[in-house]
Image (cartoon, rainbow over all chains, first blue to last red; front, side, top):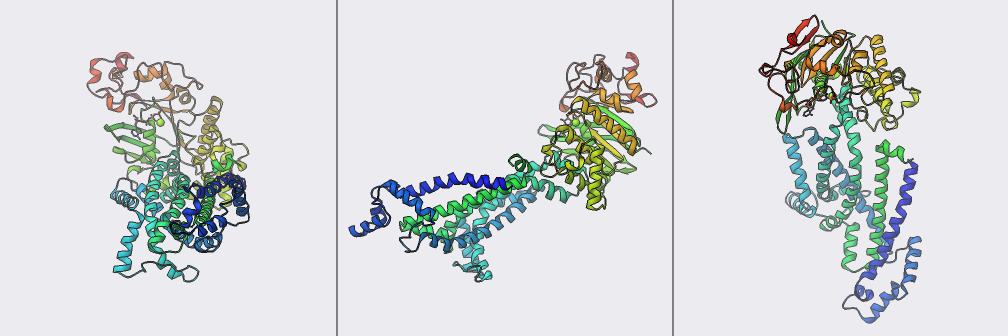
Length: 316
Length: 323
Ligand SMILES: Nc1ncnc2c1ncn2[C@@H]1O[C@H](COP(=O)(O)OP(=O)(O)OP(=O)(O)O)[C@@H](O)[C@H]1O
Ligand code: SF4
Ligand SMILES: [Mg+2]
């Protein structure tokens, strides 16, 4: 197991190198003079020169690249032009907000998706199956901002059960966190839960047809054991790979939802940064988020190996 | 009272092209400690009969259209799911045709055997471990206790089939259904497994339903034989009678190539033609499309199983003419 972890971590190094290189290059993809573009239309020549100097754009490209990596190794991703804060610090302040929201949405996704997928498979071709799949399709087809807006109108404006937006940290007030996070988490989760339900259903149907399920029944095991132990343990193997993708989608989906519900997370931070041409912030934020996703996918790979002895024994 | 009595069992499958009858009016019985061989070409309905007895036909698409299955005086077709579940394992156990895919890939061999014990008996973890190891040794797995933590993919086909056997036998069933227990194995291992089954029959006094394509396997093990063709029983006989005086033209065809254990008769070359699809069976005698003795009258009605000697019956209208 340890060997798999080490191998995956080693495999992540080239990925992170490529990502950091692309992030570095981003600023040079701006057509024309990047410093002019960043400073904006109304900037004076002096302001442009300042930006050029601050970002090191007056240096030769190779030395810029060298500085980029030297700073990266020291954990320095520069300073946000907009906030005046170090990029790493600004990101780390906002990251827990997004992570807590994503974790909440992930739990909802897994709960709704797995349970309804398994039930639909067990009740294949009954009305329960059909209702579950229609709802799943609905969840997949409705954009999360649309679901979010509907919920705001219903639960915040009409019924006044929940606030329309804003954010309370979990550590400060768990109930407040739940109140402010539930609508955003649900609007993020519905799409992915629909996706997961459909995948779980088809995977379970496939697994339930396997010979070893018949064997489990032939041994006189109770139906519950056959489904929960024998079938689900196998169905989870392909499902876990999908969970990696789901986490990526959750984090990218948070951009929209954080804006809609005014939640001060990474999504909101990066949206503001992009709108204000705060390039260092965009670069740093993207790099940290990507690194995080790479880590998540390593975790998924390790789970995958833990669930499947064939993988576990092949590679250790 | 017989251990198992199957009467007029008829099962069908719902398919894209309508309902097809897989097994039709099958009747037979099995005594305590007896080995009943069931032979017939691929698709003749052997596995469907076995799965019907186990209550494991996938429903849908399968449907039991009629008949009864009495096991120790209980009609299995009327039993609740819960009672059927309790019967599987200690009452009736089954070894499947597909050793490579019949074990769950994500659990250890030991876990898969021990959970069977746990489902039916109140044994401590230590005792069920001991029982599982003992059973693995009995089916001829070397260094059994260290195999307990192996996963199925670490075992060869022969070993997996032995594990399946250990799993089926661990609750000492009164009836073992062995569906092609040796087809996937090479000749020497085949012989060992058959030997083992006979020994275990003697030791536990269990009855065995031995399903196979292979007349050699029948000759080695069975006390009595049921010959199936296109979902029906065409002949039933004690082993000695079957080989010395086969009655039905189909059985004669099966026997006309010399049966030996090491010859797999997946393709029964002695009989020209092939088993008709369930939807394309000829009217009257199902075998008439391939039978060398067929006459027009054969297509008029399905011949009934008729007893010619005590315990020896066949379903053919021309037996007295061709004998
Ligand atoms: N799931 C199913 N759906 C439709 N038809 C089926 C299904 N299972 C079996 N059948 C049909 O039932 C008939 C009998 O099949 P069965 O598996 O009992 O044959 P068999 O005698 O065991 O053959 P083999 O020697 O190949 O194992 C076949 O004609 C087959 O097409
Ligand atoms: S009934 Fe006719 S077709 Fe059928 S086996 Fe007898 S002789 Fe052949
Ligand atoms: Mg079969």
